[in-house]
Image 1 (tube, rainbow, N blue to C red):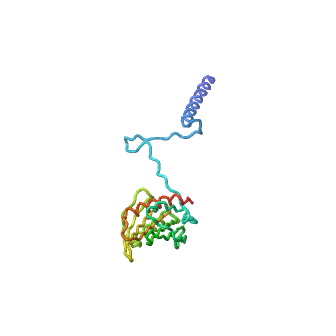
Image 2 (cartoon, one colour):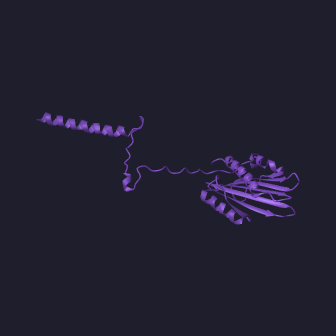
Image 3 (cartoon, helix red, strand yellow):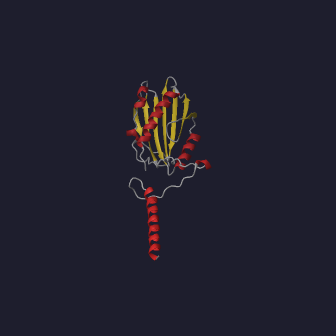
Length: 215
């Protein structure tokens, strides 16, 4: 009688051991370590069986010590027939970043300028505040949001007549903790179309983004 009880006990132990083994191996992935099986809830009760992955978040950028005077490609300005007279690499005031001001002359000896500026703040929130402040103090007319660059971007335009027709276009954009600004101004006997300067500023701004490394 005792032997029968012992036999039944051994059988139960074998069954339990087999069930545990099946549960563990079912959680293995291509020979990897065991993982607990996920418990899913039927979609009929309003909870999806699977969830979408969280969107990727940009890491922080470091815009310091960039030689933008050397790294900025002026090819987009070729059809304006401008020639660089001098450059000024003075960095942005009171914040971490780099910049270059290109002072130029047109073929008919009018003034032209290009400013390329990168600022890396301590956080995306700080960069957002800088972006908003630029909107408020630029003194230019908003030309509307610009898509396809950064998390937010906007263009501005201004026309003046300081003895010649002076057309200005500024584009600034923010991505994570990085704010990039491109200001292009060209003088002449007539104002240039806004879309002409806007396209050139956008090309330079996109190229500048690729020049800024992650921190």
